[in-house]
Amino acid sequence: MFLRRATLADMPQLKELYRQTILQVNAQHYSPEQVTVWASTADRTEGLARRINEQHFYVTETNEGIITGFGSIDDSGYLDMLYVHKDYQRQGIGSQLIKQLLAKAVELGISIVESEVSITARPLFEHFGFVVVEQQEIDINGVLLINYKMQKNTNLFV
Image (cartoon, rainbow, N blue to C red; front, side, top):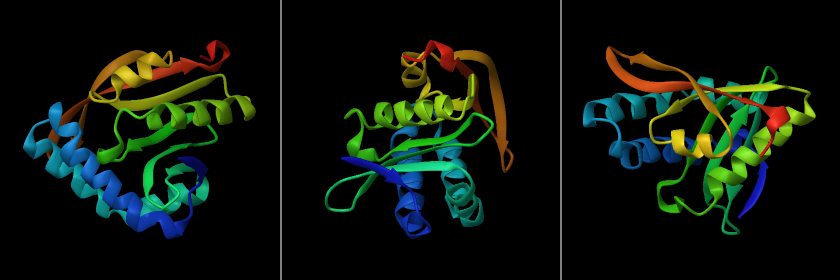
């Protein structure tokens, strides 16, 4: 696996990775209705293109060109996205991405990184020193999902 900046040409793979990860991995913590409505947000391509162009957006990729994960952070320290391909779970990809995003935050002089984290991803974020600030209910097209607002002080970089 190698890590690189995302490009707009990655969008088809990113959309499918996002959708399938939610439907198959997040389904262990969310109901069928919740994952269906959440996965439907993959069709918002303008938001994905904006993130690729405006954020520090990275992908992990195999030598064969399969994108195995992606993550992004903006200039304010908001870790916006972190997803790992359903077929590449528990192989260190999420850790590789978080390390890159935290290193970028340090490089940018950001002292607090914030994120909104799913039930599924919470243990990974906690492993890297993020703490829950509050539990939230988010509404996606009338369906409520639980997630967590989490923070990490980059001065405590792990």
